[in-house]
Length: 315
Image (cartoon, rainbow, N blue to C red):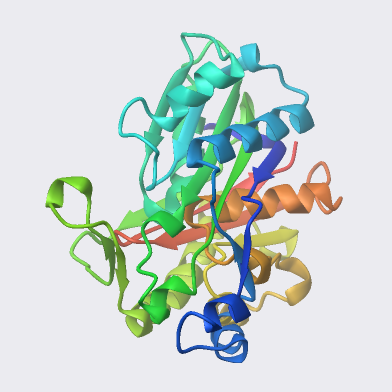
């Protein structure tokens, strides 16, 4: 199967920073308690910014870094579970704001924190039938809109932000070898929707989700490597969903992955859901950590329960 490679990334986060100490003034918690259990020290929270605005700015940065013009985009996908409106979609808002062609495929998709990996593979498939060879894949969530700020077990975990990636498709390139899955019977991590008559609030069985995440990340990494015929030592970076530093550490140790091949930034941002992976990629590019030919294994997991992994090369 033909495939895509990464051209450029961008990100955008709200101006307001909420530290663990800020939360400790509102509830029974502390910086030591939060950071020791999660690795999180602060998060960005939307004030006047909207989810669509964050996605738009992240997309602009990604296009600029990729050196790709809006008219060259054939597919625009936004992974989110906190859109500003059910319709038009955030992707449609991006089409207007960025000046994408009107025949660009634009839609939102919801696979919770796994959304970016789902969207990456979907873009790869759609580009095979597109007259243009570039796609804009965005993950953006305003998690502060749906957390229960009285529940210290969940509200400490999440932050707001957006990350975007421009990928290029060529028939001669290998597929990203996506491994995707879902356990729809599980209610370990969920939030009610607008049709339920309930106020959307995140609820989670933390211990069981932790165990699921460690096992799933380890399995996804092995499956992606097997599907793509890639040796683990040939992968430069492993970029895992930034939900909890202990999850990342345990999964990496299970797989024998050294800290020098992990990128972890959740101490500053918390869990930004679908934005997590592309936000990390954007910071890596900004810091000069990504070079042409670098191979990256991306793994996400989240509510649904959903999970997904892919092997993405830097063009």
